[in-house]
Image (tube, rainbow, N blue to C red; front, side, top):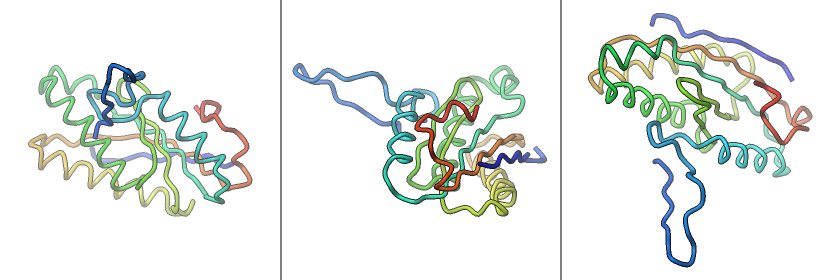
Length: 167
């Protein structure tokens, strides 16, 4: 296991239907961002690392820099838009078909595969640029700075079925 820290410069919610015979379980998605809950992410992480597939994974921890200033400056709707655009961008650009969860506030965790360790910084920088372009399309014309910490896990490193030790 090797750790790597990158920095972005310059600055579907899942649905469940309740029926009388099968009440809905705990929420599977954060209502503001659409990201998985921690419980749902933990289950997905454990399922992936115990699946027997020999995947090389990256665990991304992403933080929105100075997110607390967005709500007072632009309003809560803009803050929720930033969260939703971030999660959708992570799903589409970093983590295709892999889980993304909100750790709380402005912090997120995600899994990705098929990214070479030497390419992580370049992939993240491109992701930050595309995320900010998408925000501009939503009418938020302030550049948002993102920070990321990444753990790169080769198949032989995947002995833990819980991602919490990487926090």
